[in-house]
Image (tube, rainbow, N blue to C red; front, side, top):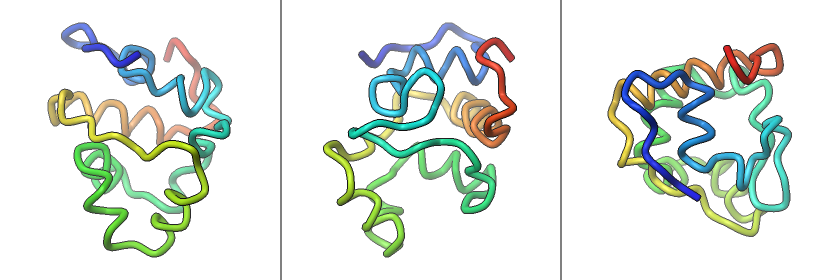
Length: 105
């Protein structure tokens, strides 16, 4: 379930509050609804990832790799336009940490 994170929430708290766990799992290993979020730095810069979170459909329309990913799962990535730019940036930074990121930061 998507909710609004508390003001000043950390990346891991934003991930949990925003409902990312429902598709990507608590451990970010992915599921039938969404891909693994480990090792994102190979395909994403932090600013691009934060922008993607605001409007995934824009990125999917323009990127064949993203189109293929989108078609591979039972759900499409929703826009996180309920998050502020600062929250999307904190979430992207936390996701960029990859496997080494702890759930509590």
